[in-house]
Length: 110
Length: 113
Image 1 (tube, chains in turn brown, blue):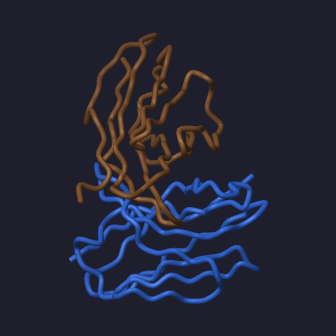
Image 2 (cartoon, helix red, strand yellow):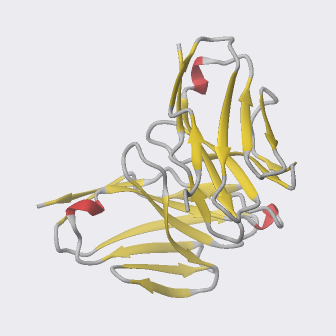
């Protein structure tokens, strides 16, 4: 079992650019959640996808959007990048209460 | 909304016991989680409490009091590898069937030899 995988591992972008991050959930999991973790902080919930629909959304602007595919994998898109978007982006998959986290994508915005 | 408080840093000695406290205020409650996160790595699940009381799992135990909005994580027989950030997270009732978590800022535990 490969667990939750994310790509890419690291990414460097400049302000105003757009980025797409990818996540493959743990085998058998149907729900994918995305979190943003700034340095020294806990993860902040962005949104959650289930059955290819956004089921719940945290306090993030519309620049953050996502998608879930029929195979349960998911993408996180961020438009018009700001310096403050620099963070570790974590994907978590679940089937029940416990969420399993991927290794994350470290995004740096210059 | 939700507000979760936990100490920023703690230091303990190898072989000792340490208790990391977490208090929360939430409009509804649907479970409390503890995660361990080593620097540069993903959070890994430690424990889940939904009812009051103590849950024990090896060297790690977690306690919950819903009436007090309080939880703690107890680590026994500390090892150097236990040096990490420990995240307290609440699953709010407002999440409904969703499984979103609201995290505290984490407690950075340093285990000294």
